[in-house]
Image (cartoon, rainbow, N blue to C red; front, side):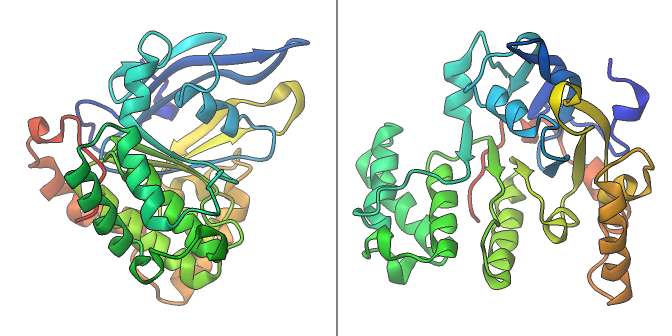
Amino acid sequence: MLPPQYRHEGPTYVNDAIVVEGLVREFKGGIRAVDGIDIHVRAGDVYGFLGPNGAGKSTTVRMLTTLLRPTGGRATVAGFDVVADAASVRRSIGVALQDAAIDPFMTGRELLRLQAVLHAIPRPEGHARAEHLLERVGLTDAADRRVGTYSGGMRRRLDLALALVHEPVVLFLDEPTTGLHFDDINKLLVAFRKLIENGGSILIIEHNLDVIKTADWVIDLGPEGGDRGGHLVVCGTPEKIARTAASYTGRYLRPVLEKHRQWGEEPTVEEVRSSSSASKSRTNPASRKQPRLRFA
């Protein structure tokens, strides 16, 4: 059972997208990059994954995506154990990490079709998914250009499309807005919301607090660096993080949310959640089983 301070404030759904219990990763010299964290990620929400450098964010994501074996504890993603059933985890997730190795000599359309082949998707369906994704990420006009001619924002949007070809249950994004113009950031935020309409989940490592304020939930790790990283400080809405004195992130998130309200922007996550909780509670849990991430 998760400690009270780590439990979500909102309703709990069956088939959590990610369940982490006592997860540990220790490196040589006894350094614990991740030190016994517990996390539950609900289906159908966007989660921001925050903390200072050295807090264990990337290490945690590497374990959840089966790129690094945990030292202790357990974790399941889309219902599959990351150690005992790593192959099923990889089939169920999409991953877009920083500095993705995208062949600059291939076109966007060729890369998406190749990705479909690698996932054993039949050719007609793979081609159809490629065209649909190119349209949804705004790359139709550039589909037959070599990726080496794409701007940074175009590459990030293509990387997102590549991670979605097989319609994953959970999408992991590592600083997707790094180096992007604000217009490209807004396009990505719109894309994220379209992706979760069918109940999939997104976990984002991101330092742009204007992006994090739009997340449904924030997981805050700390403290900073060395052998003291990898502790879960708090998990909750951006507003709760901003109110938490022990949160390293909260002290910087608080003024962002205050400015957000001062300028009369869209309602906060808590305000939206309170107005929609009744309709969410009526959702049939069976319909949320193994949701897939796809564009509407």
